[in-house]
Image 1 (cartoon, helix red, strand yellow):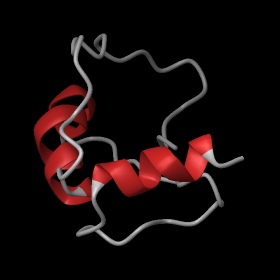
Image 2: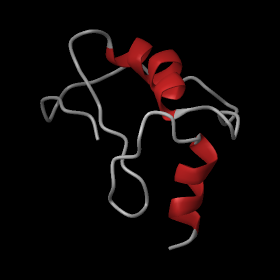
Image 3: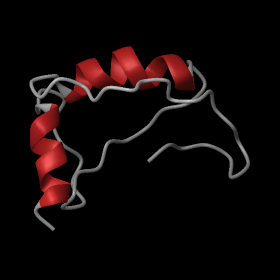
Image 4: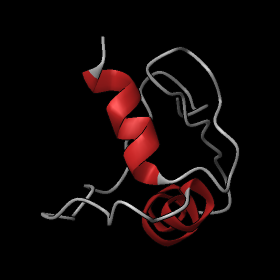
Length: 69
């Protein structure tokens, strides 16, 4: 969830390949999402259960939380 005005536009998410399974949520956020958002905006990562996973949570665990539904 990105906290921004309704009509705010961001650069395209320009990654064709998924992040490595063992990438932490913090690393993914800082290296892939934050450069698009800049310093003006923040985002919350929400897993498939509606929770905000800890920053050390591996990306694969969050992916799987959506696949299990």
